[in-house]
Amino acid sequence: MFARDVDRMASFYAAALDLAAVDRDDEHVLLESPGFQLVVRQVPERLAARIRITDPPERRSGAAVKLVFFVPSIEDVRLAAAEHGGEMDASPKEWTFRGWRVWDGLDPEGNVIQFRAPAA
Image (cartoon, rainbow, N blue to C red):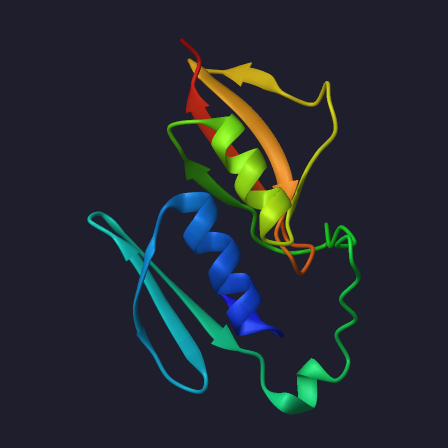
């Protein structure tokens, strides 16, 4: 995942998904759990200057990809998002799909992401 603010994005995803930062350098942070890895990589400087990030994040819904993450608790993700610069959609946006509670939100840079937790 490319990011303008690598540290902020890595902090958000580490907290929201309970990932550990296992490697980093000036351009990337590698986050992982036993069955998943996420690399947060610095957007090249020439492109970063054109990206406008707001607080709270402005929805960037024109992306070609929407990441979906399976988590134990939507409530825990809500707390992590609030503490680390993300935002969950306001109620009543939750729905149920194939046995999962589903909720959309934004990461700190406005990318639309989805979280799914067991419905029961």
